[in-house]
Each structure stands twice: as C-alpha cells, then as structure tokens.
Length: 185
Image (cartoon, rainbow, N blue to C red; front, side, top):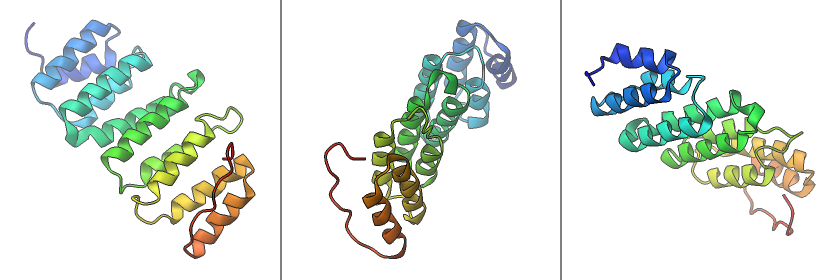
C-alpha cells in the first residue's frame, strides 16, 4: 500500500465507512509517528466505528504515544458520555475518566467530568463506583474542595445525610470521614 499523507489519513478518519480502510490509515499514522491528538479526534468522531473499535484505537494510541494518553482517554470518555449514552455507555465513560486520572492524578478534571455525567434516574454510572472514584481523587487532585462539593451532590442522590454533613464540614474544616455502614453509599 502506498504511503498516505497526513491529509489522506485525516480524510479517511473523517469520511471512511470501511473499518479496514480506517484501520490501515491508523496503522500508517502510527508508523509515521503522527502524535497530534487533533488528527485522532477525527478518527474518534467517525460515526461508523463501534464503541469496541473506538476503544481499540484509543488504547493503541495511548500505548504508542504516552504523551497524548491523557487527552486520548478524556476524549474517549467524552465521546462515550455524549454519543453512546443511548447504549448506557456512561460506565465506559467512567472507565476512561479513571484512566485519564491515572495518567494525571493531580488534575481534577476527570473527577469533575465523571461526576457531571451521572444519570440519577438510571443510576449510570453506578453511584457507588462514582463516589469511590471521587474519594480516590481527594488525596491527589489539588484543592479537594471542588470534589467535596461533587461528593455532597452524589451523596444527596444516595440519601446519605451523614456523609453529606461530613463533606459539608470538610469544606470549612478538616476531619476524618465517618465509617460507612455495609451497603451504604
């Protein structure tokens, strides 16, 4: 196969409906060491790709170019939240927010974005998973106050007044969290 230019790759990412064509362009982009996330955003927005295919491309891109892994994971999380919400892929979105947080633990954006994507009527992503994720971010994601606010909102959905009160106090003072009861949120 002849070597594709970056413009040819971009066009295939945007317009192709054939997985093999898209895959070949992706392979060439990796071989040519194109690490511009803007190029791959075109790929991720291709409407013919399935969620599993998006994951395949995103995981490979993040592995090949660690310098764009955070942006790749955040972009995939956003796509799954917006585009595939009809398939309840908020859980997959949370998975990619978690991967982004693992790459940049000091960055609060993945935690805040994950909390924002919660659908209380459907409980997706599952509230317990979301709360655990935000709690993990408290130690590393800079100023924890914004995470306290999101935890209060999530605990309001759970109806856990004790934890709501605790995080309200944390906004103004420091203390240890109360022990949660088994089965509690």
